[in-house]
Image 1 (cartoon, rainbow, N blue to C red):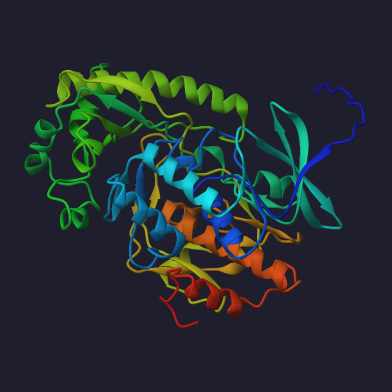
Image 2 (image 1 turned 45 degrees about the vertical axis):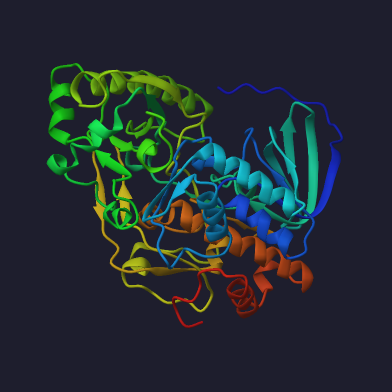
Length: 449
């Protein structure tokens, strides 16, 4: 039987007021804040970690997967262009970049847009009146505080603010949910020696477009038979069958380091209990993977684990129920929406559970409707990222970072236009939103709108 304590009633100080409040500074929240501010709104951006970028930086997932022309526009293209100018990104279908430089550039863009940035601060609740979201409650070293605004953008990735405001959501059963991964970096690698294996192993799917601009692959996969043999002998103590090596060394700077995407961690990434056990297991597995590479793969003879990511890369938790639920069939049939606000194209990749892997190919680019960003039953709030309104299979494709950037720019622009026109986001003229996005270089001209 659960036990409870009764907390004393208290007043929560309002420390900031703005037009738009964005909770989360990752690939959805960062462009949302930039878009809102550039469209004339006083904007506050709240981030629970010490840096912007989310999965791309604190999660060490330094690859913009599925970077195609249909998503390559607006704020996303600007960020990439700045990274390229800094010598810290090699463009391609899997655009590889240095996460530390990415953080610096994001900080610069936030400063230029005159956004009030609040780091080390977590959104823990919503301020709601009559189904209208009017702000967020945050917790930090400064205590419990309130930040209020005319519109809130939930960019937590898990729908934390929207759910606390009363939004409904769907969640796949844990045994069928896509697992999380703790990325990590290995040093002391002879990358030239490693790359010499490419003719024997072949390229990782999706990297061929990268070779048009760069003579070396930006990522490769360790052959599955090698992994399974080592597991069978008990040498590799990790329940995996894929080890993807991201070649930061070859594509950006001569560091002797690579980034590894491998271990699958099953559990509820919205549970601190599960997250704790997943983190402990991940670190054990990552050390075992490092030793496996050292003992078996050319180029890794003198390698060592440098560091693990500051946070896990989470592929799936909750999916908010919005005014429209995007489905697998919508994607595969390339359904056209009058209220499209972003495009995407990426396989429906299921990374779990366990060692299972599915890869449903998406043969064309598709559009995502505005209504997927609007939680049903709530006003003055947007939700976005991997937790928009869609089904389990659609999530496998939509979750990619370039798509999240596009969705974020749409949400931030829509928030600004709603305030300017004194309407709720649900009543906003979508044609005005589409026109504004295209005027601001968003990649939205895939379909006739």
